[in-house]
Length: 160
Image (tube, rainbow, N blue to C red; front, side, top):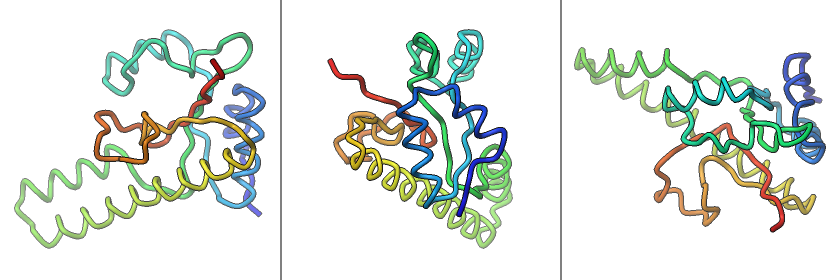
């Protein structure tokens, strides 16, 4: 049975207890890694400046003792700048076969995020926990209307 490592557990422990419970249930069935829980205002400012976040009203910034957001990915996963550089290099070199292979690998990585998000959302539903995923900000299950994709991101939607 999968379980969180030390680094993931430390980050998870900065999150609201309901997020902790959600992720403890998820990891029993779907191996995953916590990238980030609570973050400082300074880190949030840096992420906004880099375009990796769009707001200073992030739920990663603790409200009271806990963060109401978490960034978590299915494990193992290969993604990031190295893959983007490889795709650009293949495109620039006009190496069509290599580009096709890289794009297919990239699509598989993205598909894993969507599959994982559906699993997390299903567990949250079973718990009666209202969450928002960074791949479908408005929660309408129409992924084509998203203008900012943050596929590792999940956050609690607090009752009004």
